[in-house]
Length: 517
Ligand code: HEM
Image 1 (cartoon, rainbow, N blue to C red):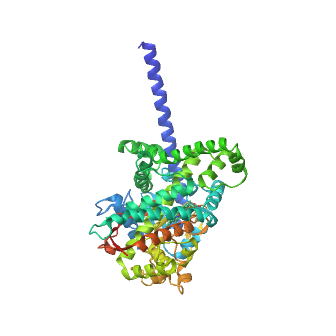
Image 2 (cartoon, rainbow, N blue to C red):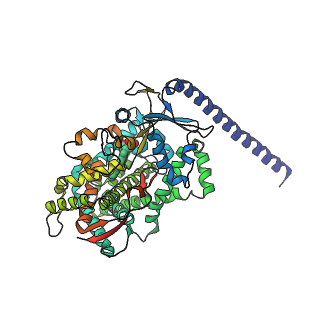
Image 3 (tube, rainbow, N blue to C red):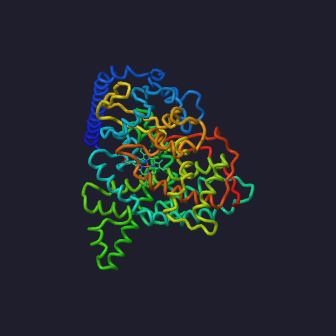
């Protein structure tokens, strides 16, 4: 290399290096000033609340790390335990204050306030990306409209027959373990049932178990959720560049590609199928999809993508990926936990079984969608499972305006708020037998009184759009499984340990024995 070339390169590196340095300094100074300005306004208001114990630099995070063998699995339970000590308090996530609220009136006030959003979910980009769950404002409103239509009860007949098909298939597959001494973890079977039926319901795509691309997504979801939860708890990992570097050193960047493989493949296959049909039917489909609302969720998204320049391919993939994540895991956990509870409470299981027999008869199982409403005691058991083990035990909001609590305290705008659903579900004034699993909490006489402190699907404008779908799906699966098997377990309540990332899952498993009916 000539000397001139070398000196040009050296100058280039100097200029480039200085630019990067200047940008870094500017960002740090800007962030520090913004933080100081915000804290000046927030501190007087926050001082009126209880403060959770803190340590220098890491704040209250110390109490999540203290005496912990495995931070990733134990942090959820520790967080709930810590928040549960106070009705409303401040938790210092390093230098960032988070206000935790546990009174149901305060939780309602925040959930029902349309100026409180889930903007922080941008930190969970692998899980939620640019989907409805992470959006706010006009974009969120437009996406939510599509979701509400796609999962409206008038579309349930088709969903129901597909869920029935996969439930029968899984019930038969479990035959292998019936009346043997083998203890099995039903989680894998139920997860597969829900993944297959949900993906068919939204896109007509059939998951191929022998295809690595299809299976990779399921593993990537759990790992990414864990990583993003760590990112959320450690503010130093919030800047994208630092988080990406962290992933690079952990060797986990590939997960972010894997999580997108299945949604991308579904879209590709759907597009090629639509093109084929279009050619065969002489453009009839094209005319239809331009005017009427399509039947499948994926077609609704494709229609939106075709007609709206701001709904890019990235949004399309993200929406599909997120709905698969939230739709599959939550229903699987609910089915598994309800069966585990019924296995621990045999009397309740017999009562549910008698109800199923009364409604569906003794012969071959011929359940109709309208029968599901009649399964009242089963619904009490499902609700009690949601109460005792809420799938989303805590949720967060950032409020764009000051929020006044019932006792007059003010939560300043811009503050991150934790809504402690778990605490509300364990309020002994409303649920007298709160520490135990007791379906009587939801009997006919008390249900209205209790539902005001009961938020399994959230509440207000951002409430879950899949609540009715989930209840229909869970009941259909339980009818099939409980009609064929009596489940027993050696597990006890204290064996259940919840890991918390985007949802709470029991990492001790769902260990059951199956006996024929
Ligand atoms: C037992 C099953 C389920 C539970 C316990 C559950 C729970 C929840 C909760 C608590 C929220 C609100 C979170 C918050 O306010 O921060 C939520 C939101 C959401 N859920 Fe579910 N969910 C379940 C099933 C489903 C299903 C099956 C779907 C899809 C069909 C779904 C789609 C969504 C979406 C899209 C949102 C975000 C709504 C918005 O931001 O406007 N969920 N879910």
